[in-house]
Image (tube, rainbow, N blue to C red; front, side, top):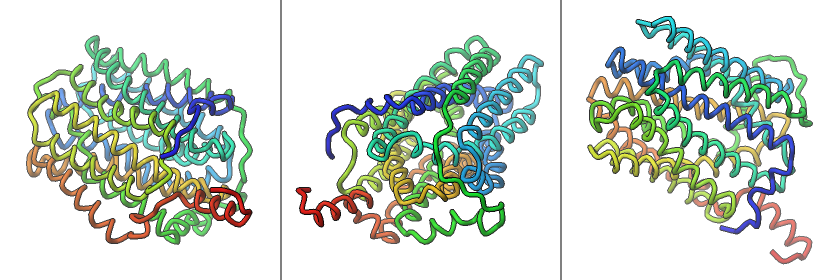
Length: 421
C-alpha cells in the first residue's frame, strides 16, 4: 500500500461534495426504511419466504430495466437521471408511510412499492457509477471512490441504528424521517452542475444496449471481478435473514436488529477510510479474493453462533472483507472502461451487484424455508468460499494481478521517459 497525504482533499470539487452529501442522505433514508420494512413484514407474517420476497420485489424490475438504464446513462444527463430516481424513492417512502397510517393488514402493498423502488434503483445505479468519473480529475478518482465508499458505509452504519431506534415509536416515524431525508437529497442533486460527459447518441437498439455486455465478456479481468461478486454474495446473502436471526436465534428486538444491520457497514466504513489514506496498489488480485474469503468465513460463523456479540463481530468482518472486494472491482471496471460506454458497462456491473444482493436475499429466504434458518446461513457462507476457490482457478490472470492496469501503464510510460518509478 502507498500512503496519501490527504484523503479528504477531493472534497474541494464542489460537484463531488454536493453529490456525496445527497448520496449519504439518500442511503441513510433507504437503510432506515429497510429495517422498518423487514421487521414490519416479519412481525406480521413470521414467514421466512416473505423476507426473501422483499429482495425479489426489488430485483425483478431491476433486472428487466438495467440494460436500458445503462444506455440512458450514456445518452442523457446522468445528474438529471439520479435526481429523478431519488425523487421516485421519496414517493416510495411516502407510500410506505401512507400504508402504515392506514393500518396495513396485508404485506402485498409493500412488495408493490418495492417494485417501484427497484425500478428507480435500476436507472440510478449505472448513472451513479458512471458519473463519479466525471466529477473529479483522474488523479483524484481513487480517493473519490474510497471517500464515497466510506461515506456510503457511514450512512449504512447510522441508517439501520436510527431505523431501529425510531421503530420504537412505530414504523410511521421511520418512514416520515426517511422521507424528509430523501427530499433533502433530491434538492441537493438538483444543485450539482451537470458535469461534462461523452454522450452517446445512438438509438436504443439491441446492438447499442448490449454494448456493455459485449465489452465485459471481452475483458477477462473485468468479467472475473464482477462475476466473483455475483456468485459469492449470491450465496452469502444472510442479511435478508437478519430479522429472523434477531428474533428467533439471538432473541433481540428491532433495536438489536438495527445494530446487526449496522455492523457490516461499520466494518466497511472503517476499511474504506483506511483505503482513502492507504489505497491498495500492489497484489490487488490477492486482496480482492482475500476480501471475499473473509466475507464467506464470517457468514459461516454467523450461522453457527447464538451470541449477539459474536454475530456483531462476524458482520463487522464481513463488511470489511466486502469493502476490499468492492474497492478493487470498482477501480478495475471504471479504469478499464471508455467514458462513451461507461454507463452501459456500469449497468452490467449493477446487474451483477443487484443479483448478488436482492436475488441473494431471495435465495436465502427460499433456502431457509427449505433447510432451516441457521443451516441456510452456514450453507451460504460455505458456498461463498467454494466460489472463491473456483474463481482463483478460472481467472488466474485476476488472482495473480499485481497492479491496476492504469498503474501498469503509468509505470511503462515513466520507464520509456527515463523517469524513476
